Length: 134
Image 1 (tube, rainbow, N blue to C red):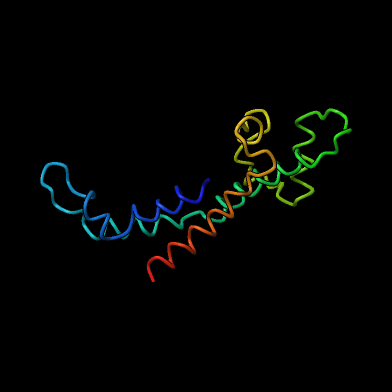
Image 2: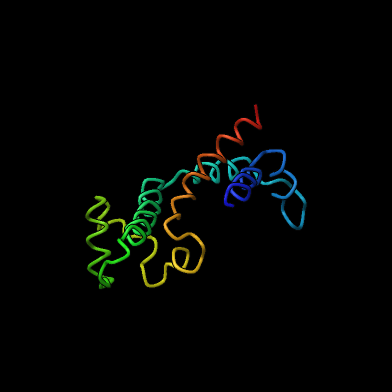
């Protein structure tokens, strides 16, 4: 379900598409190339942090949904700490993107133990877009 939207996001910065909307609203002049270059460069800024934060959320999702059916009820805060430590993503510099109590994707959002699917969709959408360009 994530693949189509993530695939289509590639078009936003494709030069032929970008030129059609990245214009000054008064003059119609195209965005200066120096600014375009800054936007493109900014796309990779802080990716280590973003990936770790994202991965922590997916691993926390898996930790909750791999509990045995007969597991006792868990106290949320200690469970999160233990799960992040188990997966070696308990980094104070990179807290999880979501906390259990408001991580709606894994409870009511239809991703129960499948939040990692965003990662797979990202791999597929990049491959597909490169194939499309070729």
